Length: 420
Ligand SMILES: [Zn+2]
Image (cartoon, rainbow, N blue to C red; front, side, top):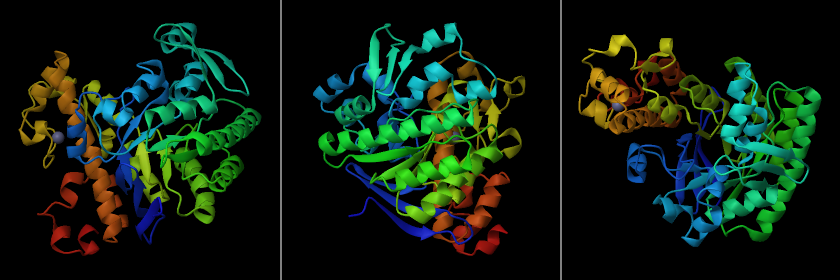
C-alpha cells in the first residue's frame, strides 16, 4: 500500500487531506507533531499525548545519541518501547542541533544575536564542519563526537523510528547566496550518502525523508525540491532558513511546494520547526501535510497559554498582573483538565509563578489541545469543502474547539454559507 494517499483536496488552495501510513499506524494529515526531543513530551505521559489527539511524536537524534545513547535504546528494544509510545515516531537527523551550535539559531539571527563563546559552550561546541560530516563536543560532558550522514542514519536505525530524516546542513539566514548554494549542494551530496546507507542497512519499513534547503532563494529552493523529488525518498521535509518575516517564510515554502506539486504530488511534505497558529493555517493552504515545533510546549513552560485571539498572536501571558484575580478559565469548549475543570487563570498563574509542576502540565495539555483542535478543524474543513471560510474564521479569532462542535451551525448543516 502506498505510503501516502490524498483523500480530499481544497479547490481554493493547495491544501490536501491525507493519510500517511507507517509501521506503527497511520497519521491523518494535515497534522501537528509534538516534540519528544529527549524521549518525552515535556510534562505529559504518552497516553495523555495520544488522548489529546496526536498520532505521531518527534524524537531528536542529537539529544538521544548523547544521552542515553542510541545503542542503549536499541538494546532495550528501540525508542517506541523505551518511551512507551506505540504510535508512529519521526526522528530528526541531528543536523539542526549540531549546526545551531556553530551558527546560532534562526531566532538568534533574526534578533541579531551572534553565537558567542558562553552560549556556544552551554550548547556544545562545533569543532569542524567537513565534507565527511561534523565533529563536535557534547554539551553534556565535553566528549567528542562525529555526526555524518551515515552516523545519523545509523542512530535513527538504532532508534527504529518510523520516519528518519536525512542529515543536512541547516543553512543559516545571514550568509551569502554563494554560501547558501554551496551548503545546499553539500546537503544534496549528503542525501545521496543517506540513501545509500538507508537502502543497505535501515530497519524494514522505516521511511526516509529528504530535506530541501536553499535559503530564501527561489531558484535554489526549486532546485533542491526537484532533487529530493527525484531522489527516491519516501517524503520530503523543508528545512533551513525560511526568511526574516512571515511573508517571506510563506513565500519560500511556496517556492518549494510549487516544484513538489509538479514533480512529486504524492510525496508527504513535512515543514520543520513551524507551529505558530497563523503559519499552520497558511502552510496547510500551501499544501504542507505535517509540522513540528517547540512553540506550544515551550510557551507552556513559560506561563503562556494559547487562546483564540489573533491580536495577541494567539497568546495569553498568565504572568501579567491582569491575570492575578482573573476568575475565567482559559478557553471555553477546551477539553483539557484546566478548562474542563473550570480552573481560573488566576490559579494557573499562581501555579506557574510558584513553579509548581502541575502548572507546566496543565498549560502544556491546554496548548497542545488548542493545536490539536486547530488541525482537526482544518482537516474537517478540507473534507467538507469549507476550508476558505473556516480558515478566515480561524484567522479572525474563532475558537477551534467550537467551529465544528456538535452545537455549531456547521455540524447541523454541511453548508459553508454558515461561515461566510
Ligand atoms: Zn484548555
